View 1 (tube, rainbow, N blue to C red):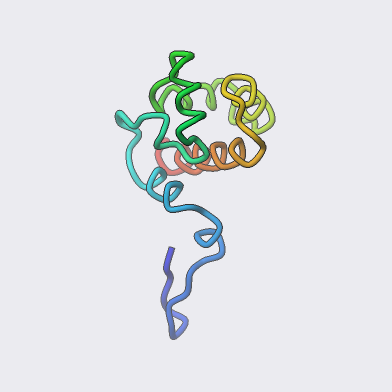
View 2: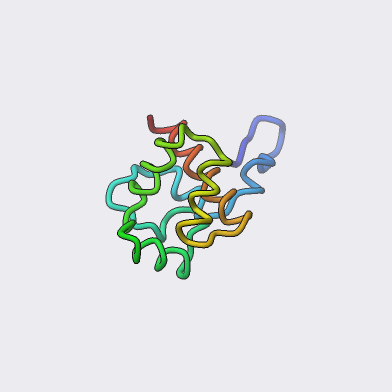
Length: 104
């Protein structure tokens, strides 16, 4: 987020740490977004998720909510389901957490 009011514009540290994909995901309704729109989920992980019948972002969000937004449990599920590494788990969790906070 670019903020102003201090004499000149600056980029908040949180924005500097998130990807464009994360920011875009969190700004829009879930709708029919595919798993590929979720932060941390790329081509390989998305393909593995789809192979297990998880094709929409809302499906991943459902698991996130079932695990009561618990980062460790959700991360373990993501690792076991599609082989997500620690960074991918964290990126996905943070994106879903922010989306949920903004939209639910």
